[in-house]
Image (cartoon, rainbow, N blue to C red; front, side, top):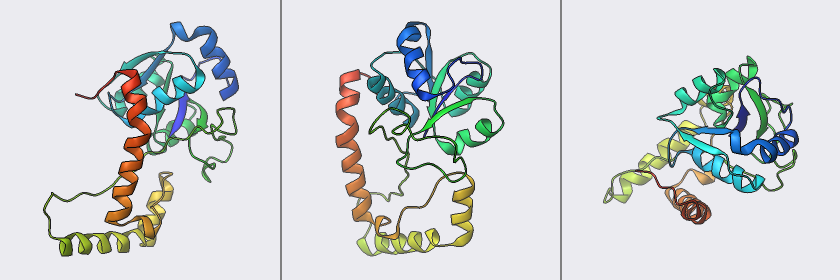
Length: 201
């Protein structure tokens, strides 16, 4: 995920942005792709870390958020690198930080939120593949092994790199690891969502 702003937003660094939000947050807007979307969760965590609420504007998807950010209709957002890499490179939007533990090789000048001042701040979007409940275990295992093979394909790895994402390690591409990841994420986000009182339809 990347913390991003409209192209003419005055702050140029994350530290400057935090100071600006604390002084002007009551007049600012933070767009997201809809209640429960990764951008919504990232925004809630960001505002909690900054200690200042900004008016949240939920959209129906990432594209209209990006359009309005580029068009200066909203001030801030938080979105996946797969959606923000091109607008950042074209300077259509401002980028303040990436929310991973390490910098991206394709955007080496973009600091992590942690090193830019929000210690411990980390948000990642991940995807899993699910089968209907009751699917025979041998089918689930076959699908899992096929997925593991696909994630080793050099063309797929290159494509992932091109859009600033990466496949999970092989030992994480299993049904057991996915279940553990899901439980961990629910435990992490549920208290924040309950405290905010915002739920997806």
